[in-house]
Length: 136
Image (cartoon, rainbow, N blue to C red; front, side):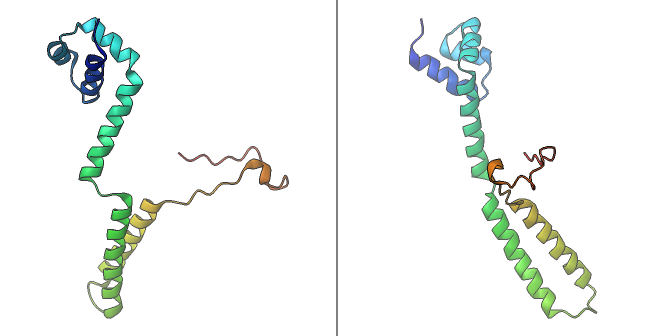
């Protein structure tokens, strides 16, 4: 029988992507036992893996808020430059294109608000059961 610390260590190492071969050696546990633990603790392993991946993402990638703020600052700078230029400048079309691109990126990053209303609050003459707008 194996103690709880060994099982917990297995869950942590498996969430990190360690192979059964490595776990057999490191924990001194048979492969059938490791497979049984993997089945028994699959949700813990998956959740721990998701938490670790999220932490990695936070470490290396900017948050949505940071990206939108950076894009907004770029947009503000481009629009300011655009206001100073005359339509006859050769690079003006490029500035218009960059402005459109930055606006599109901000719209994509922020998405639509997705407000909802409980079905029982929709007047019967406005509710149509066959119309469903599922987004996910």
